[in-house]
Image (tube, rainbow, N blue to C red; front, side, top):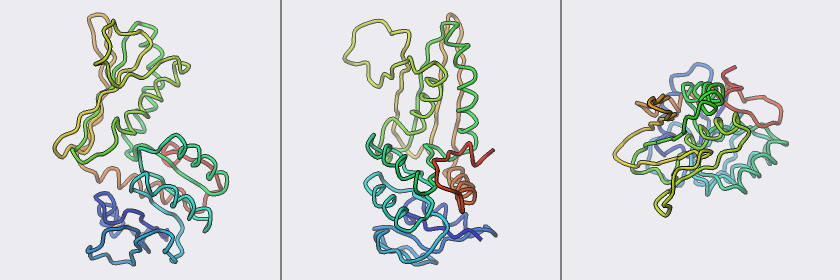
Length: 251
C-alpha cells in the first residue's frame, strides 16, 4: 500500500485526487496539507507541511510555487519522495529541484496526462523533419480563467521537446505586439488563452507552404491529471534519489 501526503488537498486537483485514491486498492492518502479548511477530509489535514508528522511513502504536490521550497525542505528532512505537479516554478526553484533530487527522488512533470507525455515524444521525433522542410512552429494553449501562470507549463514543455530536437536553436516568442517585422525563421510562438472552465487545450501548429499540420491535445476533465499523479506516486515510492519524469513512470 502506497501512503501519500497530498499537498494542496483542498484545491481542485487535491479534491479530485482524493476521490480517485479512495477507489484505489494499492494507495491511500494518509495526510493532507492546505491553508483552506472546511472540507470533510477522511484524513488529518495540516495548514503547513512543516507541521505534518504523518509518515508517508510519497508526497503529491498540486499547489502553488510559493509553497514549493517548503515541500522540498520537508522532503529532504524526512527522506520522502515528491511527485511535483506544481507549475510556474522560477528558474531558481527549478535549479533547487535538481539539487534536491540528488538527495531524494523527485518526479517533476508539467503535465501528468498519458496523452500529453506521448505527444512530447511524437513532437521530438517529427519536429526536425518539419523544420527542415520550412514549417513555422506555433503553440496555442487554452485554460480556465482561474489559472494564474501563463503560458502553461505544458506549453513550455511542448516547446522544449521541439527545441531539444532542433539543437535548441529556436527562440520563444510570447508577445509580438511591440514588433513590426516579419516572423523570424527560428522562432516558436507561444500564445495563452484564459477563459471559462477549460481544463486544458494545447495545439502545436506546423505551418508550411500551402499546408498546415496540427497536433492537438484536449483535456475534457481534470481527472486525467489526477490519474497520472497517482500512477507517478506508485512509481516513485521507494525509488532511489534522482530526477524522474512521467516518461519513466509510463515506461
